[in-house]
Image (tube, rainbow, N blue to C red; front, side, top):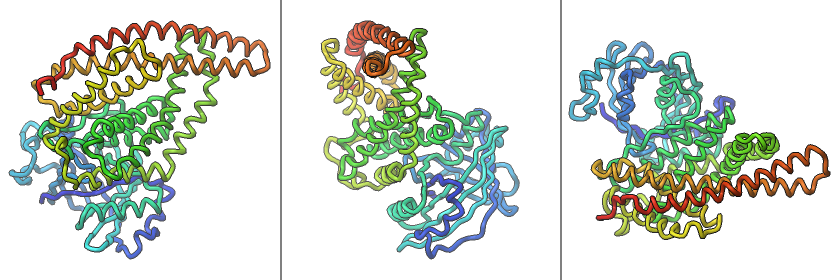
Length: 508
């Protein structure tokens, strides 16, 4: 049987799980029988199905076997799925409807190579709730995902639309989220399972590129890119909470910066009454993450040089405060509401039903080429006299370059293969310019922070240790000033190379 699964998944603290059924939003819901579910996920040794956005699993419930095939889509809440009862513990792909099953599943080489990859062991409690014409299932899953020697604890709430509209689904989700500390999680259990199977239970530094194509609509393409950023954030945020790793913070911040870049570059095509407030929310989150990241970068700069290595210890208190603010933000109702509201906006926001303006018509490739050209022209114009700009103006150019670079990288699939070589050359030149401007900004920020340190030193009572710190700070200020001069010369050369890079939209 083919179906279209429409659901939202949330993480829930274990301490709140036992009270879920008491929430007012579930008043009048009918509880189903509790189930113990053991689900085995299958793939080839090279994870061929996962690479194609497919999931193959067999779920054991009360001695019966249910085979399910799921296929990803551009939506964050909907996936295609095919289910059927089977005998035995091996996938039986011949039972899939030929006209509907993905061709990859019918290749004998793949079918014969399928083997267990990971297992989920879940206790599920479910409630059915009626809302007008809608029927919605709310499930509480508790258990674990196991792959080899690694495991991951599960405490999740799934809200699945059985009948009705996505508006009904989001309305109930927002009601539940206002009554319990639910955190939206767009990564299915299979995503976590595959990471464990690959030996990863730490920071994800290499997120998969979104599956977009040139002939997609603007809505499908834009939604797929945004969802990829959210999934990258959501796979790393729990790692940040558990470990306070520098790289985990960096990856969560990068995911939000990529998302903000998408909203800037494509913003005029999806603009509606809700977008400005959502952008403000991600700006707030980015600032909180950025404050902690800046201190991490500065500490690394200090630690890299013998004469300033001991200065890094003086940042510890500031870093502790900045990280505390990060965790306060991630635990806040504002953050949880922002993620859910944004997901709702992507799926059912006013922009999704508004007749597109003339400039927003065409394929996703058309829109990408239009925006790449528009942003490129502005970047060229603003960076033409780069050595004559002040640090703030250069930083603004760097942000523009970074935004364009993020969107180019995420939108790779929207570019026809015949243009990939030229597009890669363009991105390489853009990346070099952005990288040098980033180093230039880091050096400037570090120098200003050191000057602040010197100012604090002048207000302290003088002693040998303070004198040593001040001398080291003065040395670092001079070193960073020389570094800025060298980087500025490099930036001029990089800008010239960027101006000469090929443009794939030149003939459009």
